[in-house]
Amino acid sequence: MTATEVKQDRPRPKGLTRRRKRRLSRGLQYAVFVAAVIALAATADWGRLQNQFAEADIARQMFPDVITLALRNTVLYTVAGFAVAVALGLVLALMRLSSVGPYRWVAGVYIEIFRGLPALLIFIFIGVAVPLAFPGKEIVGGTYGKAALALGLVGAAYVAETLRAGIQAVPQGQTEAARSLGFSPARAMVSIVIPQAFRIVLPPLTNEFVILFKDSSLVLLLGVTLEERDLSKFGRDLASTTANSTPILVAGLCYLLVTVPLGFVVRRLEAKAREAAQ
Amino acid sequence: MTRPEIRITDLHKSFGDNRVLRGIDLEIGQGEVVCVIGPSGSGKSTLLRCVNLLEEPTSGRVFVGESEVTDPDVDIDAVRRRIGMVFQQFNLFPHLTVTENLTLPQRRVLKRSAAQAAEVAAENLARVGLSEKADAYPSSLSGGQQQRVAIARALAMGPEVMLFDEPTSALDPELVGDVLAVMRMLAREGMTMMVVTHEMTFAREVADRVVFMDGGVVVEDGAPAQVIGAPRHERTRHFLSRLLDPAMAEVEEGTPGEVGTPEG
Image (cartoon, rainbow over all chains, first blue to last red; front, side, top):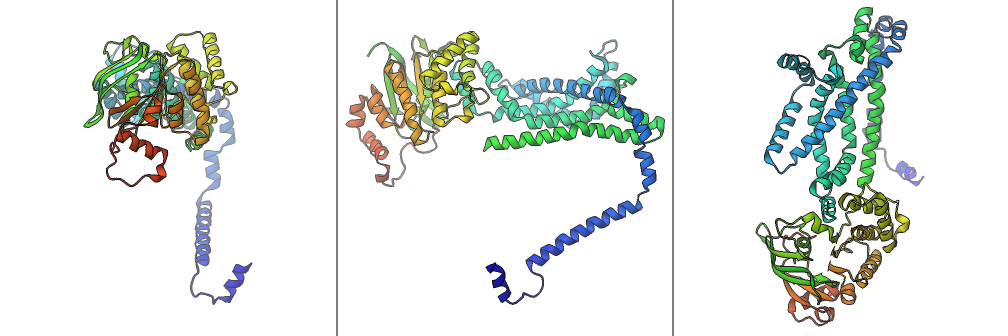
């Protein structure tokens, strides 16, 4: 340990050294954190909070319906909506990249409009305005169809921009290789470019799925039957009949059951993509 | 020379104000191997890309076999099926295995059955000596192996003409030999080949003719022994001396054709 020996020979510097400053700063940050936790714990009424949010009897009462009905419906709405979003988004992305002007403009206007509107408004539009405008006509699939359409319309705008970026990220040489082998432009796009584009945008696409999963809570604006209730509606209904917030907490945990693992998957995919790019 | 397989007449190509090709006339006979050499920016890659219309010529005509490539009414996809192309950057499809790289174009473009495509793929992988990599993905192959797969992919379509765009320029020096060996084999088998390259040894030994381009025109066109061995033009001599002995080159002002021209 020659370094310390050398140090001892030198006169101790006055005031705070770098090492002492760092220690002091770290200690201070811990102190603030501990103080905040203690203050929170002291002010909260734990008994009341437990009654309100963690009533075991009420929580037990929610099972198995919260999973077999509510979570199942939420997943169904999301998957249907995501399917519509990807299909419509792909069409919009290809329109955006088209050499025909009007296609580009229509897709551009769509994307600007639907990215600029709150999802809530789209659900009201599908649930209330469309039935009024087209009396006697029904959207296929009932509530499921309406939810898929509303989520799809919102999601498609984001998916379109994501896919467009993905398609543009596929090197030009891939198209040239395909064309030189005799692929038509459309076939080269479908067989060579789009599969690679989907690979590139898999992480942001998974993210979009998570966003739609949360937005599916807006189906309550479509007017759902008991059998069609999603997690949020289910939790809220039970919360008001029992005058207790435990169902909200349980519903929330059910969302996290899906979103947290998916978020983990997204980070893994992103890390893998970064690795592949190097 | 037998009947010309590739015929190029008065070909011009401009990128904006940049006139890359300024009137090219060139004929390549059936079974002939022609190496195109020249400084970067001389337009040699652009010329090659005009032959299968990856670049649209500004004016002039290109014929391959019986078809005119530059005819606006030609079925360009059908013409391209007869022209194999090998790129500097290999351009294998990274989402497909080596075998799938060879079978997908056959199935989608030539409508061959799965069994037939697989058979042709295996045959051509064997020709380039990569049968054992059939199930590998391109990313796990060396550059030289990727380029050989790219050649096999082009061959699996049964082309009458092969275009090579600096096929060894992106390779580590020790991997160049394997690719050149495959090209040499093709030349021996009588394939019509147009090769843009900097490999002078290959040009000298394999080519029937060497074409030297500079500034968008053909400066010299003749047997390798003449163009490389005893160049008639000062520009050819200058280029070759710089290429063969780069350490001896002097600093020059305004190297011709070096300014802002796209290459490859």
